[in-house]
Length: 80
Image (cartoon, rainbow, N blue to C red; front, side, top):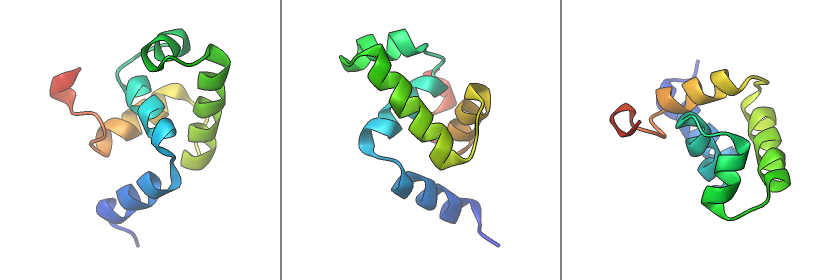
């Protein structure tokens, strides 16, 4: 059975840097439009990245993805 550190390393390795950026902003509660403005990319590109994050994480819910990112320490709670 994997421990949480192994799970975190596996997850981080599967996501591209841009997908990690998007995941962190999802965890901060940003909408796709807000993420697009923050990263200077189109909303359509954000949607593609979000879909990739969902697929790679095996989830289909924005809240689940955000909670998982917080649990993995990708975004410290004190920064929210």
